[in-house]
Length: 203
Ligand SMILES: Nc1nc2c(c(=O)[nH]1)N(C=O)[C@@H](CNc1ccc(C(=O)N[C@@H](CCC(=O)O)C(=O)O)cc1)CN2
Ligand SMILES: Nc1ncnc2c1ncn2[C@@H]1O[C@H](COP(=O)(O)OP(=O)(O)OP(=O)(O)O)[C@@H](O)[C@H]1O
Image (cartoon, rainbow, N blue to C red; front, side, top):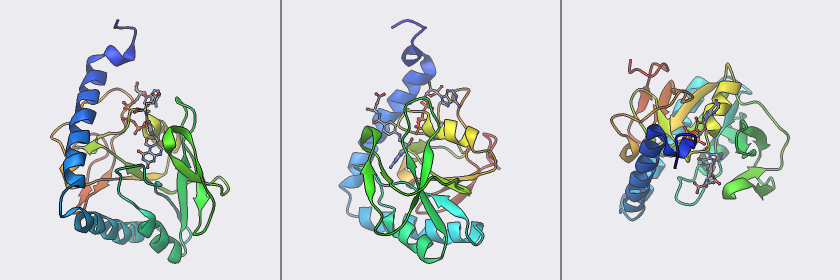
């Protein structure tokens, strides 16, 4: 590889090494006896925290689970029952921000890029974006699958509030970051609602 290939840059390599480590941690968690209880704690904390931060009619984006990820469908159901608008991302071609579509119970779900799923509903603009992560740190920095989708999306959706969600085994001391990585103002785990400064430092 040469320096003209982003995959050879030190940060990209450090991120890939961390993705590999997180895959190992996730496999161990998947086989653990506490998995169901831990995931349920995260779902309940997400519903409580999201209810507290939105106003009537606000739109919240979640995600349809990829294999191995937590299933947020009970969170989608609970927020929809509250009268809130729930949206899911449609994975766009690489290099573009995500777009969001309205989700409703019983709506048709389509399979899109990289095996991600999105509803057939109309496009919407979320007020609160729940951001999936493979790893995070207390500054609010996160690591994802490497598409840069949420970094581009948060940069494009000025004014939307972002909340990362993950499990405490995904916490690391310091995520390797590049110039486009966007710090999250808050991250919710099964144990706590972490308030980060949103500028890459802890409060
Ligand atoms: N459930 C869920 N939905 C989500 C995300 C997520 O993390 N979880 N995303 C979070 O951003 C976006 C999708 N991002 C993704 C980015 C890359 C790959 C992926 O499988 N990439 C291949 C490499 C593909 C290539 O470069 O050609 C791979 O890693 O093997 C999957 C999802 C939007 N929807
Ligand atoms: N706003 C942006 N503008 C231009 N390039 C960007 C932007 N955001 C991210 N990128 C680029 O996208 C590539 C992937 O980014 P990164 O490795 O941070 O993805 P990720 O945050 O792990 O993935 P995701 O957000 O999809 O879960 C990197 O080369 C990064 O520089």
